[in-house]
Structure formats: structure tokens, C-alpha cells
Amino acid sequence: MISLLVIACGDKKETGKIKVTTTLNYYTNLIEEIGGDKVEVTGLMKEGEDPHLYVATAGDVDKLQNADLVVYGGLHLEGKMTEIFDNLSNKYILNLGEQLDKNLLHKENENTYDPHVWFNTKFWAIQAQAVKDKLAEISPENKEYFESNLQAYLKSLDEATEYIQAKINEIPEESRYLITAHDAFAYFAEQFGLQVKAIQGVSTDSEIGTKQIEDLATFIVEHKIKAIFVESSVNHKSIEALQEAVKAKGG
Image (tube, rainbow, N blue to C red; front, side, top):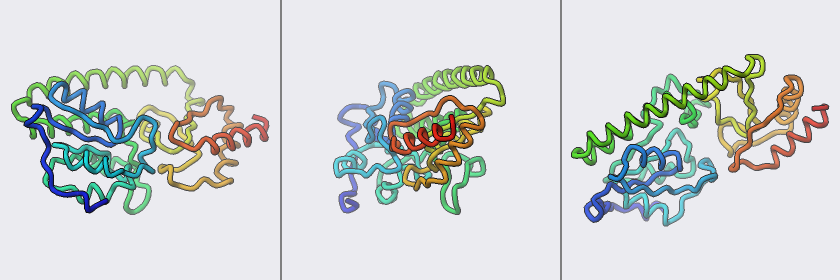
């Protein structure tokens, strides 16, 4: 597949728009909000697809190499696409994870960090600024347009942050637990004052042991937790196993 990564030019001149290729739908939405009618965005992954396990097709590589701008999460989020990104050349590339101070991130091991940074609205705002800067670099004549869109987006992000915090404040402190299918919500929990527990680790590529299921089931029963948040991209067998373990413990 890497052999397909030849030098190519985007066709911005044909449409007058910046051609952007993104990995996740979160990034597609962000580019569309800030780029407005000055961008044409193509997302590689469909909603609900697991970025940790996603394997790029030859068609995906073609979309990447023919874009004016490539935007991806980095921090090993798209773990099976790392070599592809490393071999892209002669184009604008925005690694959103590289825009953040690593000292603020959760280190998983010596070389990797928790990549689910979009769940912290402060981090997302920093990445939105980076998107604006990159679009303005490519199309400086539209700098003010991108800046205006960014400010409107940041305002809506602030409003969403206030709303979320207000809703969480309605929950008694002793009940502020978030149980999830995989450990993707640590930044969200940290920002809004929740304690998070997960069946699976930061990557859905990680193994799930029987002890993990049993320990989490015990925690759920002891704290009388009523809901578990699931994800379409995570194997439901682990959820079913947890449900059975909770029932067996009288929950």
C-alpha cells in the first residue's frame, strides 16, 4: 500500500475550494464548521467505525494523496495507519494530537498517550484554532472568514461546556460515576468531575480479562450504578458478560 503514496497535487484550482481529507467524522465536522463554503471535505471512516482497528484501503490512500490538506488525530488513534501518514509528502498535513501540550495528556506507556482528547472541550478548542491556522496558511485570502467561523464555533463550544457542567452538577457527588465500554472518556471525566471505569483499555485492540469483568461488576453493585454507556464500535460480548456478572452478584 505504501508504494501507492506517490507525490500528487490536489485539485484546489479546479473547484476553488480546499480539498481536505480527514480520518474521523469529528474532524470532518470541525473542518466544515471552520472552513465553511471554502472547503470540500472527505472523511475516510464512517460513523461508528473503530479508528483503533481501521485499515485503510487503496481508495483511502488515493483520497489522502490527492488532498490539499490531510487532518488526523495522531497520538496513535489511527494505529493501523501510522506508516501511511509517515510516508505522505508534498502536502499540508495536520496532526491534531501534536497541537497539545503532552504534559496535560494521560500517558499510557513510554511512547503512547490516551488519544481521546476531543472529549475535553479545552483541548478541542486548541485543535480548532490549529485547523483555522492551517486553512489560513493554505488560503490566506480567506483568513478573516476562517477566523470569524472559528470564533462562532468557540462560542458554541463554551455554551456546550457550561451546559454539560450544569447537568453534571445536578448529580450528587457520590453518584458521579461513568461506566463505559472502553476507556475513552478519561479527559471528559477529568474536566467535568466524574470518576470513570471501563471494561476495556484505551485501545479497543486491548485484551479483556475475566478479572476485569468481575472487578467492574463488583464496583457497579457496590456503588448501585444504574447505567452503562456502550459504543457501537465496541464488541457487545463484553457488555453482555458484564451484565451477567452484575446479575450474578445481585445487581
